[in-house]
Length: 219
Image (cartoon, rainbow, N blue to C red; front, side):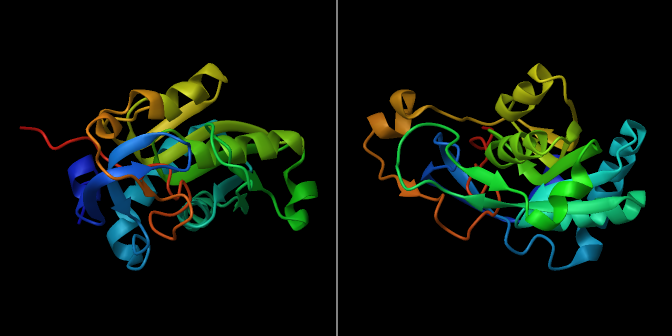
């Protein structure tokens, strides 16, 4: 498969409709199961190559991604660029409620390596951007300079707009519109549709839950 648009990407994943609470704290109505996205590297290779090409002009010395899928992607992009690789791991606080509660921590083995480095942060899919926001904050805390955020698919504008506001470039292989709601304004809540909590599941992966969700199908 050589096509790298949103429709081509969606043929590689499983999607289901419902009412989902995402890692970011937002609600959405479609969930993408990304667990097997990297199981056949040749299928995802055209997307990885295109993302690596888009990131190359940013002259990074390392690529960092949140576990799971973001780290798999970061390793592939780092290999394509001939630079170093690192990853972050998600930690969820015990208390519930609020937006963007998840933290993403850099293993101690990487803290000295990232200091004063220009870094690309990547994830398989970015929607609200919970995993990439957490990774960005963690890298900054260790003296790194994240200069570009990349994804194979960017859903909506919430995550991308955040990084643009931070002065960080955003590179996407494909983009797609989709609906993301605050709990207080969720139409599915108003309609009484049961809510599924996805942030504690293995489905979806890094933004584990941060949406790996899509907009309603076009009529």
